[in-house]
Amino acid sequence: MRCFVVISGAGTMLVLSTFKSSTHPTLVQRFRASGISRMILMEVPLVLAEERYGEVFEQLKRLIGQDDFRILDLSGASVFGKFSFSEMGHPIMVEF
Image 1 (cartoon, rainbow, N blue to C red):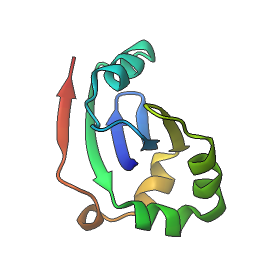
Image 2 (cartoon, one colour; image 1 turned 45 degrees about the vertical axis):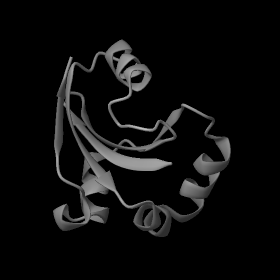
Image 3 (cartoon, rainbow, N blue to C red; image 1 turned 90 degrees about the vertical axis):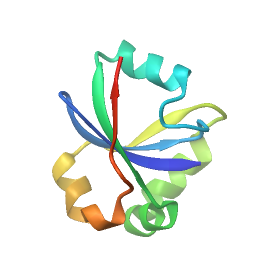
Image 4 (spheres, helix red, strand yellow; image 1 turned 90 degrees about the horizontal axis):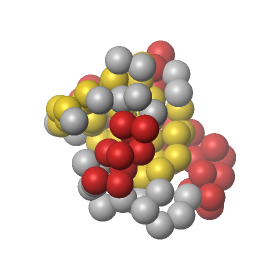
C-alpha cells in the first residue's frame, strides 16, 4: 500500500493506493477519466498518514481492494497542513 499527494489543476488531494506504482497504467487511466491530464505526485510515508488521519485512515484501509485507490483527503489546505515538504518524497511529474 502507498500514500501520495496528488497536485493537479483540479486541486490537491491525498490518495491511498494498492497499485504497485503511482504511475500504474490503470491508475493513470482512472485519473484521466476524472479529467486529470497532468499531475505532480509526492509519496508520503504510510506511518505518517496513519498517525495523522487516525480512524479515517483505518476505515479506508479496510475498504480498499487490490489495484484500487481511495481519496483520503480532498482538501489541499488540510494535506499541506498535515505534511511538510521534507516529509514528502521527491516530486514525480506525470503528463498523459
